[in-house]
Length: 227
Image (cartoon, rainbow, N blue to C red; front, side, top):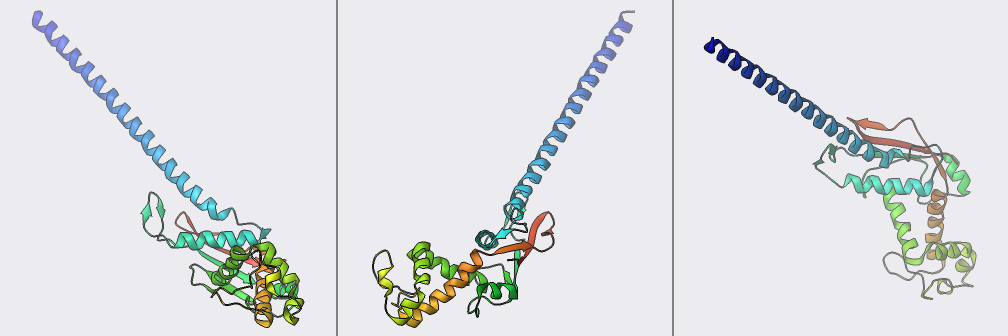
């Protein structure tokens, strides 16, 4: 009788141990599932946040100065490499921007810098980026207000009745990006080209189709001049 009681106690102890072990395993599996779900949620959030930096520009009323901001973001992103978390910086983003003949009509003259057609932008070496960057440097050097004033005095600067030093903040003659003093026809040529940059900034562009993706990451966007 005593042996039977001991056997029952042992069996009960084993059963309790098995129940505890089962409960621990269940808790461990639930914790693993919870951690896995959190990790997947974090990864999706990381990619979604990354994509939104670019897809927020996927509009039909995108201003030119906003498009320039997008161009800068894409070029800066494409310089990176490697994989960080769920983000693969080896996946590059390509922008295509279509300048239609309507832009030339709006500008009201022959285009010297911008050309009617489609530009592709991925790196600093792409022609559209270089053109925009060139004239952005004039804004940084002389400020937007000074450049606008120079453009509005184009004819006086061309015929020599006024000099650029009358309009610059430091009252020094205008210099090109190489540091050379320019006046007259050469200065007006720069100002005419700068006017194309100004027209681009004040234009409106629309998204063409939806952004394209490689895996879950945005990898392409296309825009066209609207007005």
